[in-house]
Amino acid sequence: MAIYALGDRVPQIDATAYVHPDAVVIGAVTLGPEVSIWPHAVLRGDYGEIFIGARSNVQDGSVIHATFELATRVGEGCTIGHLAHLEGCTVEDGCLIGSGSVVLHRAVVRSGALVGANAVVSNDVEVPARAMALGVPAKMRLDAVPEGTLEAAAALYAWNGARYRTELRRVD
Image (cartoon, rainbow, N blue to C red; front, side):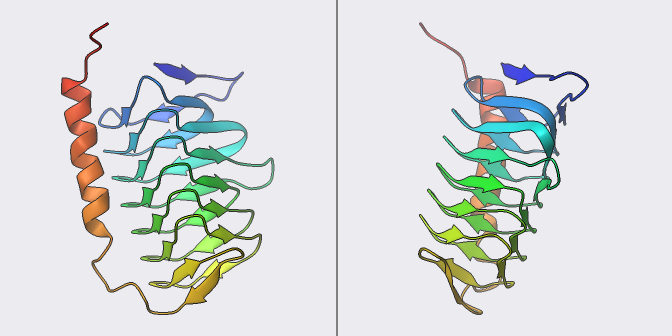
């Protein structure tokens, strides 16, 4: 598995988390219970800290980084879609960050919000709770995510992480 310490920066990974063998986790990265990190995702806590909350998932090809001044925080029960990029931002509980989207420095995605595929949430932007952020730059559709809509995706990935932890095997 590609999990690396960098000097005194050592990943803290809960025993129930799943990190795919082709993912990369470096440095000051904390993964909570039932977190799943999928192929070719890169979580690089070389400058700042990265926190991924319980039952959240970081899907294939996503990049999560931080700066010296800004940690990157993902709350509980979040789905970070394929090829997303998060850096120096906060994503609160129960959010979905769509495939190919970008969430940048000091941006805050409030609980239950959705960032659409390929959207860009620029520096210092706040996505309100249960809003959709769509487009480049992201424009807000307020109260567009019905309560309870996003939980199924996070639950599916928590289940799949447990399945992969016990069933994945290389055959070549």
